[in-house]
Amino acid sequence: MPEGVKTDCPAMSPRPVAPAHHAVIFTDRAYWASAILVRAAMAALDARPDVRLAAICLSKPHNYRKMLLRHGVRRAILGIGSLFKTAVRIRHDLPVPIDLNRCARQNRFRILLPPEGDVNHRGFVKALREEVRPTIALSFYCSRKFGPDLLAVLGCAVNYHNGLLPGYRGLAATSWSVYEGKGETGFTFHRMNENIDEGPILFQGTVPVNPDSNIYDLELEKAIVAARSIPHLLDAIVRGDPGVPQEGNARYFSGKDVLAVTRISSPSLLSSVELAKRLRAFGSLELRIAGKWQRVTGVREVQGDRGGHSPLRFRTCDGVLMEAAGFMQLPWAVYRPVKWIRDRYRRSW
Image (cartoon, rainbow, N blue to C red; front, side, top):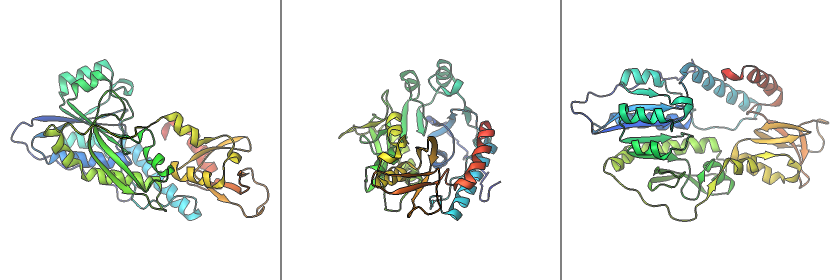
């Protein structure tokens, strides 16, 4: 088990009076930034006598041991990459996954698994309405769009979005704000409606983007700041705060928009500055080098023709000779066997 792993779950306080509200948390998995938010929400709900955590809904079964293994592997990869200077330096500790099954047993809430991960499944919505009867729903990195039937049974549904609305609706909000050179990046808690990221705003916050900031730290920093505001968010929900309508220039970024800047068939058509800008903003790029697609997490400039020919080199449109130097935060020599193992046992990762 990785060092520093916490397996204990805070015990819920005795409740002499029946709570007025039942809350459900929706998340794809309790890891990375979502783990920060789920932990904070569980603690904030436990501190309130008027709201009880009734259930946590996951998109697929929660395998805590497998998640711990992945957590350990990620830490090892970053450690190895730091030795070779191919990994980004993450200032924050990687959040440890939450053992939700254990927490559920100790604190007597339910783990819900909708059929095929579809939260809008008719049978799942019916079970929510008849058995759980939620009045509050919190969505933390849940990738499914909530349909009208689901929203109708959730009472007040609030989503955490990792971007400032309405300017950064959709996917990869943190990356787009960094790519556009903003001095800060933010998050939004908003009420949910049938349209993606368009509901009234309950709370927003920001963190600064410094010259040495990377998207991993920024994502974690936003989650940490947002987690501190969850008690105030619950106050607003319970008192029926309708939120503030979104105003300003609204933009939506889709998966196609992300692919348009991260999947590059001809890196020689980009300048070295643009390539570095995209890599910093999105963390990795899929480059076609010497006829082969490579998922690259780092590039470096090659002075002269040092080291002879390499299939990982290419020249940008401004004449700079570049070399792909990071793959999954690892150097090529280490990445190749790791990739083979990952591909061989992909179902276990």
